[in-house]
Length: 132
Ligand code: HEC
Image 1 (tube, helix red, strand yellow):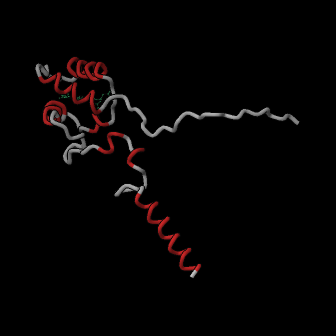
Image 2: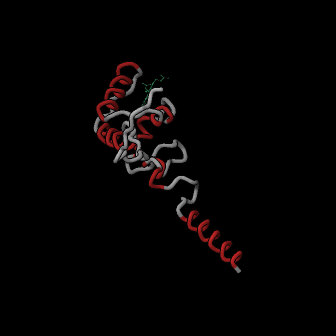
Image 3: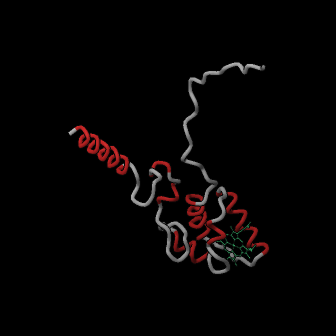
């Protein structure tokens, strides 16, 4: 009887530990980077958004979207990249659509912030190193 109880408790602990996990892996969603929870476009791998079509139209005809995904800049940084491509690589004037493209890039491809950071240590107990 005691043995059965231990097995039952064991199973309930096991079951509760599984419910804390996400469907697709062992990392709780609260630790996953924000971009990991967003939907990606099948064709380009870029994050799905209302402005994606414009970014696809303006930014994926010369090179792979991987060049965008691999980079993280501020809005100003993205603007400078665009100016650089315009000056050196025949990128056209984006006109009215530049704002839309920059809104998108700033929103999803900004310099990365790590969400999964532990809290600062509190109540640190310092001790003297004994030198022998
Ligand atoms: C007219 C062609 C063209 C278009 C359109 C274009 N690019 Fe580029 N882009 C280039 C070329 C050429 C390079 C340099 C590729 C290399 O170094 O291999 C480049 C490089 C890049 C890089 C890498 C820069 C670096 O420092 O390594 C990024 C990021 C980038 N492009 C983003 C964009 C974005 C965002 C758009 C849409 C606004 C865009 N590109 C549209 C031609 C283009």
